[in-house]
Length: 469
Image (cartoon, rainbow, N blue to C red; front, side):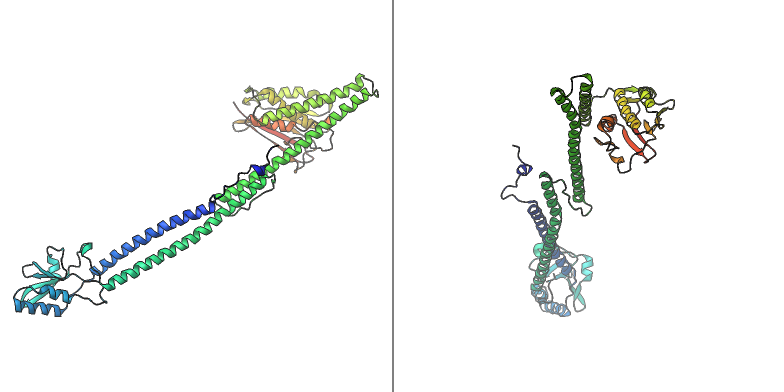
């Protein structure tokens, strides 16, 4: 016994990670990397810019420092104790986060002292010297205090006061909090997005499992206009097509059973009557058996032809076919049948029609099916017209009758298997309803199109197009 669809459905392994967890893990990893990168870069940038801002803020030495330097020079005659004065005069209060570099230049332009233990400046430019504060003794400039803020010192020479360190720590903490907040918001958004993405996929999975169990009525709601919505719409159309195909299959099975039941019943009844001696084995009693056998043969042959055409296994002997000659042969073939029914059969073919690439024998079968159908539904005194015309790289052929027509609700189904315009018509006189279905398959195999138009009470027109050679 074959396994049911449910038992064939693969089960997820124990411990397997679902799509939701995978997406959340991916979002968490991306958020963590992004937040860490932003926090590190922002902290480094803040430290660098903070130091640059403090360093670029010009510090002007006080007059008291200048006076102390002048007094010391007067007492000693040189700058031997200048470094202690510069260091003691540097701002050390919490109000000043930066300890600026103070350089003392003598009257010869040489650096003689600094408030830092070492300095990187080899010489002072004329612009820096001009911006410094001169140290005057008896009306002469003996030195100049310079703050070279326009030339940042190397990183290892930078020093921040306790206030500066605390300020930077607060800035870094604020950056860290901002990164944590942004990461949390990103994870929350990722959770919402993950749920919005996975939820329709779960609906699709549930609906697909329903179809696997044989419930072809499954549909999924469509929301949005993204790829998932497109997938949902495709799934719904697939499910609808499967449901329609299943309905067609069931109807076809019922129709085939019905078509086979009638001739088999007649054959069985006649044979039982002959065997029981009720009917003599004469021609009049055996002839119905032969007719029903022929009907069964036609039905089986039509089904086989239709199956081959639908599977694309029907070989076509394509040749350049003259449409005018093909239609004239069709008229001659149905001339007697139309005369018996007292129906006028006319032909309208313009000169100069291009040839078509087709299998002449299959086209003759298509025209035969259409003409048989038209004559069957046209009353005495009516008319059936066969016409052809050129149409943009193709030739359009049509069979038009003046019969009862086809109701609008039946028109879309005229090419379905076992379709009959008159449901009460007997099978013996009305065929089995496969002629139009076979005609559609033949025309589509030729690369053409086929259709029908009708106005109830005014007749119908069946047409098809074929590409030219």
